[in-house]
Amino acid sequence: MKKLLIILVMIVLSIALLAGCASEDDSGGVPVLTESTDSAVSTGVTSASPPVTDSASPDAPDTALSGAEEATGSVAAPQSVPDGDVIEIRERFFVTQVEDILLNASRYLGRTIRYEGIFRSFEWPPTGETIYFVMRLTRGCCSEEPIGFEVYLDDSIERPDDDTWVEVTGELKRHEGTLMIRVVSLIEPDERGAALVF
Image (tube, rainbow, N blue to C red):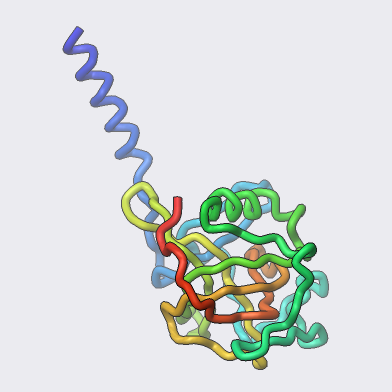
């Protein structure tokens, strides 16, 4: 009986080790949250699709990141969005709500999303352009992993320093397979929330 238990434990550990951890590819450790056409979602590090940057223009008009669509707001003067029209991602259910948005993107595209997190900028190695994220950290299989969204900031929105705690409000869009928030408001709240969420 003891041998059977030891064998069972060894099998479970072997499966866990074979499943492996998320690995980084040549993207330089940039967390990109993407949704594929078959609804299998990658929340790890990937270079499957290039990021949207300040100078990027999307291929399709329904991505709404073109210059014709003007977003307003800044750190000093956020645009007002009626609370009844906003999906709030709360700290207590942060991971659950973000994963629901990633898995069911079609239900959320075009909706206004508001959440708090850590502002980060990354240089996209293939182009050298800067991309931005507002994210938190959650436990992965081997370490803490980022969870959140890439954010698109037009020229009217001031970029805070990296690691600044911010509240972001914007419209959920898709650009080249990547879900992102087109920011209309980026403010620094008085109180900082939990960076590590479950």
